[in-house]
Length: 172
Image (cartoon, rainbow, N blue to C red; front, side, top):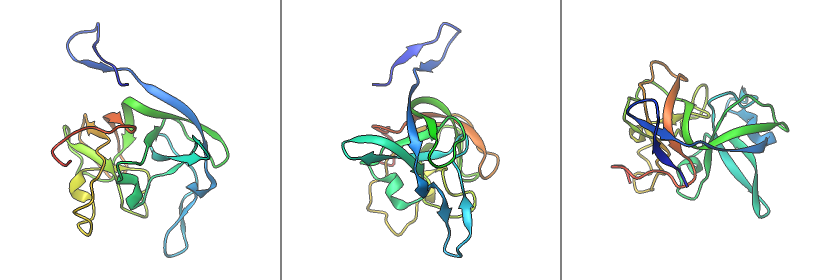
């Protein structure tokens, strides 16, 4: 459960952070249709998907497919860099630094996992308006609210994030 409390440092909200450790899955090395590897490791701020191994979530892989936005998908944010086979600390709920897909993410926007593949698309969050129109009937899990505007593709922005239950918003 995410705790919301007033901070003792003046007006505003403080979100208690929930984090966990996971192994980085080999499938983090993502290859585009042209055969060129685009990402070979998880970087700080990357959006990751939690993978069910048997009966528990033990591994993560980089977000970058349509499945990343499904309500049943558990999502996190890498709080450090890691290569496949290493352990990475992942933020699940709280205020975190996350990568934005592009400049369409504005302060106050609800965000979802990007489905943009290639280049800077992997492991990013985006405004729901950037989700492909080919699947408008699909429910997309909103995972946070941007607290600042993205100035560039792949920019690190602060997000009130909940990758477990998601948040309610106008795009639900």
